[in-house]
Structure formats: structure tokens, C-alpha cells
Image 1 (cartoon, rainbow, N blue to C red):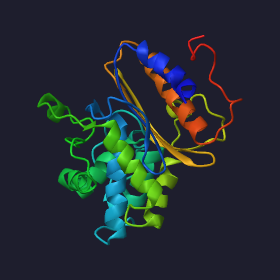
Image 2 (tube, rainbow, N blue to C red; image 1 turned 45 degrees about the vertical axis):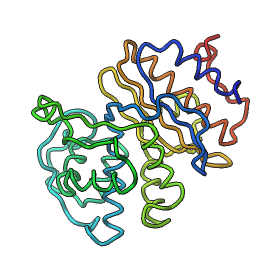
Image 3 (cartoon, rainbow, N blue to C red; image 1 turned 60 degrees about the horizontal axis):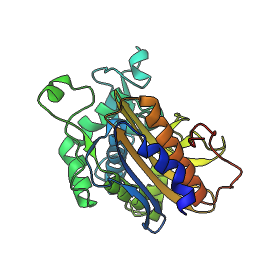
Length: 269
């Protein structure tokens, strides 16, 4: 097992930055951790608990995924709505898909506005996440100036993914609906960086200046949870390498073949 984690350990040892890492099996046993309870800027990974809150509330009849919600203020960053001038409103279901698949920030803010920041935090607390916090809408510069930060821990994020794997987000169907959206994420890097093109990965990456994150579930013979928050980076490319090696370790733990290996440079060779 130590040989399996050696490339990741090597990359972490040389990292100029900080990293919160959790690798866990489908029963929640932690297989590898690094600073699992440290608070990290969540970037777009905060969209995971927002998505889970929306689908949990919909499953309990508190909101309808078919309710049409205005696009609202267009914000910067990832997504497509800021490029589409003819869209006025969309069903919550479509906002959620855009938020997750192409990490659309405008759609995310529409979902936050419908649910409320407090509702997302209440759900996270209900699910045992006491450190992770949604403090502001995305690209809310006034909130950032006041010191508001969306933060998460690796261990709490792993517990959210574990809830989905167990089918415990209300029920199996609701959990699978969320995993199905995560499996369509268009970012082919990060955890997927060194994996075969057809590897099964349901994940949510996140990016800010000096921050590279990715969290998800890798499946081959069994599911393995992989969570990586990498921040305060002097070299952002090094963060991508760490996340790639995290994904590769998860793939091997899930039953992936030894013939699938990262490039020699990533292994420190």
C-alpha cells in the first residue's frame, strides 16, 4: 500500500502550498489523509453541497426542480450563461445541471438565491459538516471585501460524497441523480488527469488563483472517494499534479490495472 501512495507522498513533500487530502473506501474507512480537518477555500467545490441541498429539498417536496427561476445578474468566471443573451429563465433542474456540468457561476447564484445561504448551511450542519461554510454568492465582491469566504474541509467533503455513495441523500434515487450530474462534469483534468479516458469519475473541480481542488468518486470494481483541496500555491501546475496522482491512487484502490500509470515526470522519475 505504501508503494501505491509513494507518488502522491513525493508530490506533496515538494509542494509549495498546503493540501487537504482524503482517500476513503465505500465504507468510509480512510486510506490516506493529509490535513483532513484544515479549512480550505472551496472555489467551485462549494457547488457540491448546494446541489445536494437542492436535490434533498426537492425529494422532500420543499421545492420543485421544474420551478422556473430567472437567470439574474450575470457574473464572471466559468459557465455559459454569461455568453447567452437570449435566456431569461430556466427550470431549477437546468440551473443545477449548468452549475455542475460546466460549473456555471450565474446558474449557481440563481440556485443559492432560491434556496438561501442559510438553508445550504443548515443542510451541511445536518449532515455533520460543522467547519464547511457557504458565506457568499459567487463573485460577490462586497462580501469578499467584508471577509466572507466559502470554505470546506477534506474530511467533511468526503463525508458528503460517502452519503451519496451509500444512497443516503434522502434515498437511492436522489443520491444517484446527484452522482449522475457529477459524472458529466466537463473538466477532464485534475482527478481524471492520469486516468483512462473511459474511467468512471463523478467529481466537482474548483479553481481560484493559487487554488486547485477536485473531489469525487472513482469507480472500477468498487467506489473510492477522492478529495483534494490544494491552496496557497506558488506553482498552480504542481497542484494539478497532486490532484492527478490523487486520482490515480483512487483508481488503483478501486481496482484499476497497474498498467495505467502516470507519466514518469509526475512520479518524480
